[in-house]
Length: 358
Image (cartoon, rainbow, N blue to C red; front, side, top):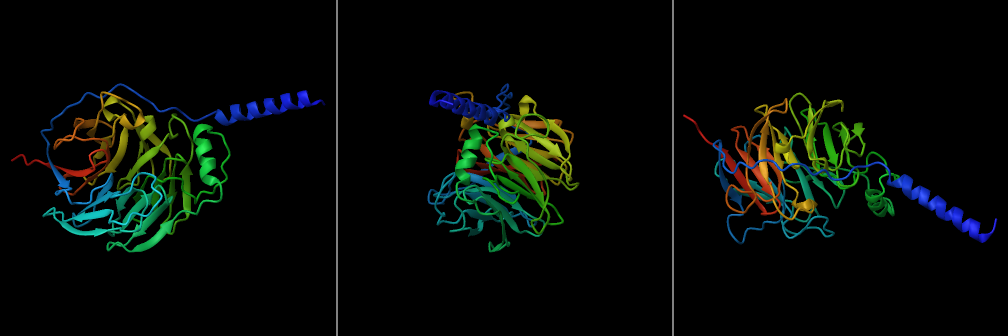
């Protein structure tokens, strides 16, 4: 075989591999903009944090409520998304549920890029970090109890970046390695499920010791497939709700990972965070399309649904005024039905307190 033919065959083989590696996956889904309802008759808004210019408030990442009603606000302080250095300042602000005053701050020097936040039934604090590629379990006092996620092997990050462009590109990693995990939800028995979103595009369920029970690891836009699972929550019956952000929908699974339903109506918008609350409703924040290249007609809002996916209420508009939102990233609900929204764009925590109708 002469050199010309060898070169041709090599080029043909490389082209074939690129075509194969490029198959699968899905593009970001854009859909009809939801109708904005600027005002809500159900809730009244107030900014809880920051209160003063000197308050250390970075990009808002997560929010959760413990058994006493205290509000935990997770933010990036002086850090940023995909930061490389440990953040020196505290990244968790704990607000008293009654007075809304700061009780304590936690997390200094522990995280590089805070993302997901969860409080379990024993008031332990669970967080995800998309730079450290780990899930952390902290005591209520903020001390590290456990961490989950294997270390990257050499070259894995570059392999994952290539796979983001070529979905079939092989990346040799096991089920216990996270690739920019976005959120975590914890069941009453101590088991937990992780939305392993930015690189792996999967959800994975583990027992309380961290042993894998099951995973759903299909990239696409068909039922049961994911394109950036960004937020995750679970209800008292073990059903799991996933904010499938780039597919602009909520997906619902049972406790064994079996697909149940998807909610993708225009009013859902682009879900960033989801919370299955004790009142039986599902609360979602629409972060809009601004991070996906949209240059106008930005949307942000809160959507309340029942467990069948029927929309009970949607409210909110894009902006920085009290009651408005810019890229709401996460949502939590307390026992009284008050909502807490962590806003990435406004770098703040808002409360939407439920009005009394006597």
